[in-house]
Length: 363
Image (cartoon, rainbow, N blue to C red; front, side, top):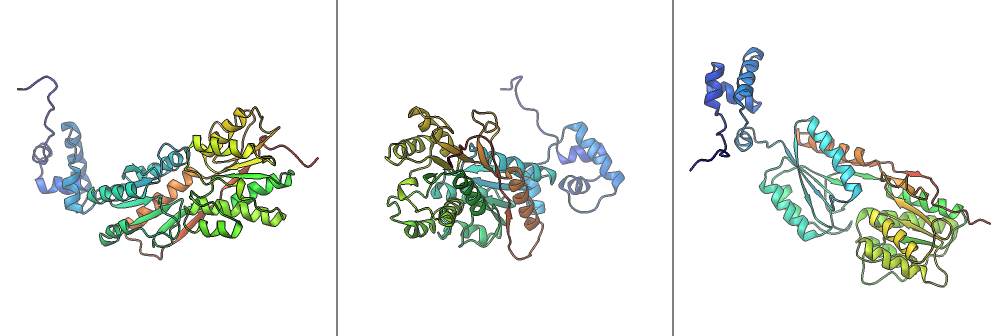
């Protein structure tokens, strides 16, 4: 039984051909974007299709051209301001080339990442951008099907030694070293680091921590190495009690920082390397009745819109989020188009933005 809300059937290629006065094959070539059609005929067909409200069948088109004009994107957390900014750059670049983007989130779970890859392969995407949930030296067997199907892939934000692919990252180690060095230059020697690698066995010393880093997310490891570099250059002993090893969420950050602030030799500064780490640290400072930067100085990672308007304005390491996504899409689209140059890792520069959240302790 029909209703007033029943969907009107989409016009067919035959109806477009009749309206334009050409054959079905000519319409199929024009609307499918393949073969040759004269400009005059093409304009007539497009005008007829537009007047009839014709919408191309993407599945049928992909069977004809071998392309879906869709890119798959697998991110750790689409709600994270960093990945949201990257995604904006990625979709902007894809749209310029008339590609759609299918986005899936893993919540840093390898199991969900494997399921997401299966979905994208089933959807026959033309290429995949992946922010892997694996440590730098960990195997990713669920990418075997991607290689078998010869689907181009670009790694985003994190490197994995076991994956041969283009990658787009930032200079995490250098940026973190600069941020921690700025704290040291302001007289801070007790500097907490939030987040360290998640592990059930916290490091016993700096060398042990470097071993743990080998199996941490690449970006996490690089930021921690930058922290260690700055301490070592300044001759400041490494204290394992000032590095968190908890599951990454705001409540865990709050709990961990509360514990650090309860130490007899509590930190005078905190370097928070993600948004949840920063907000959790600020919450812990407030719960202890302390103030930033009078009692505890802070530096965050990523320049969110609120960082410059909060009290005090937050010093941060700013990543070029839009540029990261844009470049990842451009690299992937080049591979989809047939670029067979050697794989390359593109390293973009993060910058330290100094504001008012660091107190001078040199006196």
